[in-house]
Structures are given as C-alpha cells and as structure tokens.
Image (tube, rainbow, N blue to C red; front, side, top):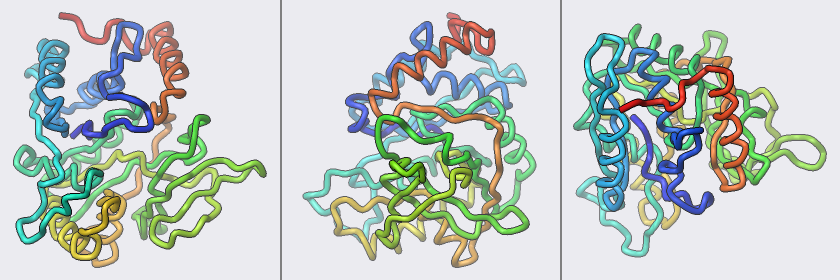
Amino acid sequence: MVLAAGMGSRYGGLKQMDGLGPSGETIIDYSIYDAVEAGFGKVVYVVREYFREQMEELVKEKYSNVKCVDGEPLEFQFVTQELDKIPSQFTLNPEREKPWGTAHAVLMGETAINEPFAVINGDDYYGKESFKILGDWLRAHEGKTGEFALVGFELDNTLSESGAVSRGIGTADESGFLTNVVEHHKIARCEDGKIRGENSVTGETVELADKALCSMNMWGFTPDYFEKSKDTFVSFLEQHGNELKSEFYIPYAIDCMIKNGTAKTELLSTPSRWFGVTFKEDRPGVVAKFQEFADKGIYPTPLYRK
C-alpha cells in the first residue's frame, strides 16, 4: 500500500509525481522496483479523487510490462482518501480542510486487501534491504492475527537540512516489540547539536536520541489490522472529531492497540539509509543520490522499459 494522497503543502506540489531519477523516475517508482524484487505482487495506491485518473494513467504507462518474481503481471488497485469517509455516526465539521491522516488513509484499503501487506509513504526512499526484511516478515506471518511490524530507521539519518520534520519515535522491550510509539513534530537538530522535537501527546519539547529508531511509515500488517484500526478511529473521532487539524496517525493507532492489548508490533531494524523530499529544497540532493545509484549500477536506467 502506497500512501500517495498527501497534498505536498511543504514541498510546493504533488511530489509523488515529481520525476527525480535520471530518466524521470519518481520515488514511488523506486519503491515499486524494490518491492517487486523482494517478492511483492500487488500494489494498492491511496490517492485523492482529483488526481486519481492522472495517477492511473501514469501507472498503466510505466508498469504494464512489470513481472513479479513468480512471472505473473504486477497487480494494481486504487482507493481514494477523502474527508467525508468517516463512520456514519459522525458528522464532518464543514470547516475542516486537513486530511484525517495516515491511519485513516490505510483504512481506505480495506476493500482491496485480504493478505498481509506493507504500508509505505509515496515520498520516502526506504532501500532494497528494507523491502526484503519486511517482505520476509510478512510471508512468515501469513494467516496470523494481532502481530504487526515497524521497520525502524535511525533518527539522525532521517532529518532534513531544509526544515523540521515529524517522526513516530518507537521504544521496544527486550524481545524487540514496541512498548509505545509516539508521533513527534518539529524535530530538528538544534544549535547545541542535540535533536529535539515536540511530543504530540503532551505538547512538550523533548530531547531525542540520535540513534532512536523512528517510524518512516514503513509498516507490516496482517489483514485484521483494519477491524482493529476502525475501532481505534471511532475512539479518536469521539475525542477529536470536531477539531479542525487533528490527524489519525498510524503511530497513534498502533500505540492505542499496544496499550489495550489488541495487537503487538515487532520493531525491525534495517541497514538501509532513508532519504526523501519533505521540502522542495531536499530535491537536488535526492536527484544526485538517484544519479549516483544509476552510475554505480544499483538500478537500471530507465527503471522500466516499455
């Protein structure tokens, strides 16, 4: 599942369609390439209705000849995230303009997904190893319930030089399962060299460890996630439904499930280094990185041939 419904307000445009690779590849193109190599066979895009048709045309043009590891064509589906897609017992505040967040976006895929699945952002590069790690985990959890996974990246490798970012910071027990995961905003390295961010629950500004494992929204879920998350969304709306800017984040949903005992989430580490385009100023560095990958033969150019 690719979360591609974001408006790109900080970036200044639809970054999920921005060509960053040597032959105009998007970050999503690289993610699809790595996912197919890791054994994935189906992609569900979460988009907004106003650019769904454009995204479908791009996908058909680029990926029509892609074959999975089993030789079958890669399957695609599209679902849309809109403000009014909330449980019928709630009334949408007519003044609300902000989307409901990443956990709401995942819920849009319920009718399209019946198997263990990965969730990724459309504007983040996760690396080949990350997809292999998560793909192996998902295959090992076929038929299981109440067991999820988060691929965690070291916080200091996920900062942007162009501005502050938001990250879900995870804490794990000795067995490697999350004890909590809390979304933090305005994360940046300060003048004294320390990383600080605002805890979304308490509102406090706190110091964060450089090597803390954080969420870049690369999750592994079994299909029962949808029912569990719907229940959590109802509780969220009861508390925050009339607020204009509150968002139902995946880390929030997972943290609720951990605390009420309905699911456990394994924290998986990856050797891959993340990068992405949170801000338009990040773009030149990402373009240079993909060019480097092509020069070293890590990826073919173009990624997909007609």
